[in-house]
Amino acid sequence: MDLRDIQLQQSVPERNGSSLSQQLFFALRQKILARQLSTGSRLPASRVLASDLGISRNTVNSAYEQLRAEGYVTSREGSGFFISAQLPRADLAPEAVSGKRLNQWPELSEYGSRLHRLSARNDKKGTMDNLPFTVGLPDFRLFPNKVWQQLIRRHCDRRVLMGYHDYQGYEPLRKALAAYLNSSRGMNCRSEQIVITQGAQHGLALCAQLLLNSGDQVLMEEPGYTGARNAFSAMGAHISPIRHSNNGINISELPETGDYRALCCTPTHQYPMGGILSASERMELLQWAERNQCWIIEDDYDSEFHYYSKPIAAMAGMAEQTPVIYMGSFSKTLLPGLRLGYLVVPEHLVDVFVDAKAFSSGETPLFTQAVVADFIEEGHFYRHLRRCRKSYQQKWEHMQQLCTQHLTGLMTPVAQSAGMHIALTFDDQRMDDAQVSKKFRKQEFGSSPLSSYYYSSLRTQGLVLGFANTTGEEREQGIAVLKPCLDRSALA
Ligand SMILES: Cc1ncc(COP(=O)(O)O)c(C=O)c1O
Image 1 (tube, helix red, strand yellow):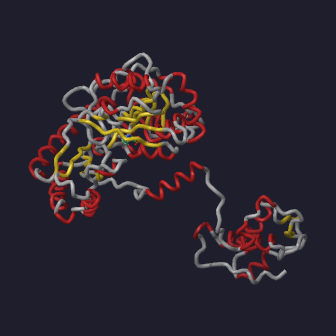
Image 2: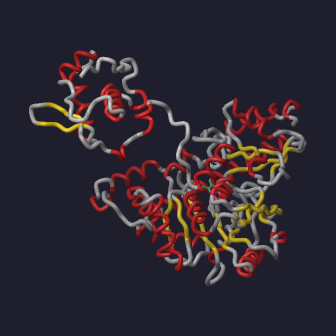
Image 3: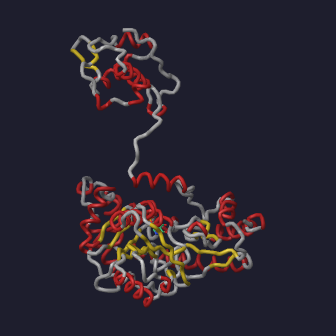
């Protein structure tokens, strides 16, 4: 058997996972499947083939072993490798036989195809910059690393945390969270109602899977959180925007006719405009949801940061039973990198949410949950929140002052004394916010164009600036750099 026609690319040994032995394996497999090597015939001795192809004997042996493991050849002690009589048909890779690239791939599911279309339209891909003014970042400098490391050391060799665990989430964390939500967010929940998620985005995806069918109508506040919109659109839901008022979602615009399956909102700090829904508006919204048999997804992403008064209690806790799925996250209170969030769901839905989580993402990293549980239980969380609140309040005041001083006549802040970002609208609405944001980015400052939070074509132009993760110097420099970005060249 002469195999000297096999060509291997020595210069790119590991590219695309094609080491020399893999290349040899594919070349031999192709010859076997194309019947160029007949059944029962013997492969050359590894020493001979290695010398013919100018490669090492180990490389040949490893390709032969892989052919044997996959059933293309059999081995006989001391006599070598022989082409199998029965080739593994299930493994017949079409491109291995034809040697060509596939020009028609098998189809995706309806969900997959929809996502494919949506992601082709989305230009924002992959990783986010963590620049000064990038929206959504807490102050990394305030994170209590020392305490955190002590807690990690406490848990890192605990055997009970090393194996598989429970999908719903680590019980001590759920207990600590229930106590926190009941005392700080006016909830009235039991730890059994909490499902730990890999961030609030995971919670949104679970809600979309379990509450929505393709074609269902979903109401979303406008402007609103793009991550929620994406999760619902990917399920094939139709989004109906509701404009915001000064307080957040405009209650007077809630439709009294129509079939709406869910409504997603951020009542405690409207995202990104900052409105705060009053207690009576919350009650109205709840009554509307009950009348219309509509789920409310309450996204309570940064309610911990209200500066001059306590945040109003969460809607989910305003009555004995509410059609509300409550969603929270440690991304703002601790770090986004932890990927830790939680849902509070009505008792009868706990099992189905836990199953949906189990069948998609599986468990949430257990060591992190144990560390966060102790972090809350031992009072570090409350201390950390107090420190952050104080610092963000000063930063918020500084931002107001800088905007008044340098941006008057150009941009107007939508002033609400809460949160970690500030929304500013352009005084000249002919300005293109995407262009301004791009220019600002070139000078190493983050921001989000306000228009990107809109779903309908009636968009307000402006910028959203995250200030929590900035120093005083960065804020001053940033606003100074922003001003010239607002010149006439940014007119649409
Ligand atoms: C309004 C809102 N909801 C949800 C999330 C998602 O948070 P997480 O990082 O927990 O997925 C964010 C993140 O910035 C957000 O701004």
